[in-house]
Length: 320
Ligand SMILES: Nc1ncnc2c1ncn2[C@@H]1O[C@H](COP(=O)(O)OP(=O)(O)O)[C@@H](O)[C@H]1O
Ligand SMILES: [Mg+2]
Image 1: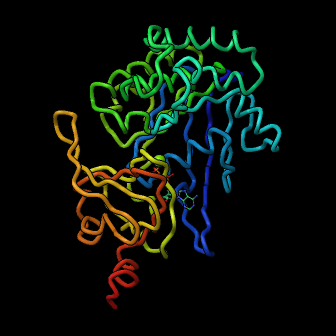
Image 2 (image 1 turned 90 degrees about the vertical axis):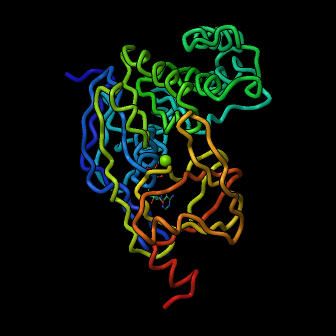
């Protein structure tokens, strides 16, 4: 007899095809988690964390393999089944918070309930309870811009809990926070795990390991850097790679802007450069085999072409 939030992932494969060229960020991944656990997916950029969370959340259908949550075989659901799975069993917390700027904190938290037809007064009352739970009971009427990054992320956690999900998924929820704010968010997730739900958090930051009940090592070299270039999209605020990550790809900006920055030991950061259309970044570590010397985030919606070092030399630098 399985508990409602037991999670079993078996032989999961995801293959993306671009112009006949295939990349497999997940290639036969298996793991189990028990109800109530905080599971950390640990791996550098490009190791397939977002891909796995998308599969767990019913946003992406895997190429092969199965996902089981309690009695539900997620990978076997039809479209309608998938819709209700996503709506009823899963909550999401994103790296870039994704709060609606014109709404107050409590309205933001209430949104998932309002869109599924809950009465406004009921939805807002539930939002108040959830904001209390994340320590923001006094801030319900603040707009996102009036809250710190850490507070915004806690609002996003409260929103992720709106439907009382069996599975709470958080994709690098601390990536945009300084270490004080990150600690508060991690501590919060840790407290929420005893709730009869399973929480899966992705991160490239090994500091989360001590709070995890289970760590899934996504590895560093699942990325095929031999293939032809591929276009990748990022939303504003998303981090492409972190200083210290194993380097693999070189990026050329197709549209939008990216900021190259360094994380400082005091938790602050130093902006080093901006890259826009036609400019590239990430070439040094990739070509020399060094870890990333700086981090890069999207400062607008961003499309980049990711090249293997060989293809970058050939196609962008024109070397033979
Ligand atoms: N929609 C997509 N089409 C093609 N390739 C993709 C797509 N999404 C992700 N990828 C590639 O799959 C790999 C894993 O990506 P992702 O799951 O975002 O990793 P992470 O979240 O660990 O950084 C990367 O090489 C990325 O470029
Ligand atoms: Mg990701």
